[in-house]
Image: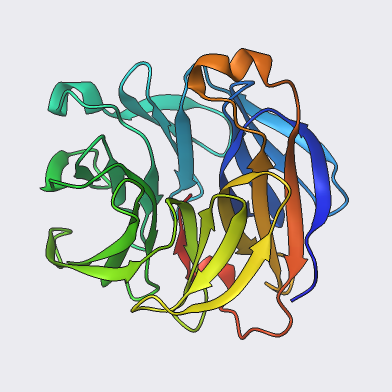
Length: 274
């Protein structure tokens, strides 16, 4: 792979990258913004979110779902900018809601401190997994049959089979990880790219590391995209801890690396979450 190249500077803490509508979209937890940028680094603030943390993904309809951790709700934003509450997360469980991923059927999987909840397209909500250890980034396979989740404290990627009704079952360790995995995404070969410390690593089921990129700061999330789906986007920052986010300045960056040597799926056929 090519060496990582900076695309964008001036972030505080970039998270939840998504390739959508020919642009990279991401959340900046430090500024409370959802930002979209093109390949030239021209950025646009799409939405202000008064929460820390927060994350988002897109429904097949083009609507954006946003986990608003502070208000403990799942927001829905229409392409024309209209907003509504899609689900009341706080009424369902007393947990610190964090990340989400939307599958190809429009179902959202949202994780809390130790659980995963399913939100159906009509906004109904139920818990589908418990007992996780600091769940973070998630990804759904293109056939909507498997959910992979990064468990930071357990230093592993875990997998669940997804039943037709969205229930998760047959949990297994997908791969042990040398470090604490965060935001993840999938490629066409079924391998996972994971942000792990100051690296972004490509891991095969079972734990074999296929590729690794070393970065100059902690990597929080990654996703695949680009016009030909030949680019890995990685979000980094010099992390000082949650209590010192206001002191971090704007040292966060978006890096890119070409993946021409890998057989990658079209990103619109792969549901990724970071």
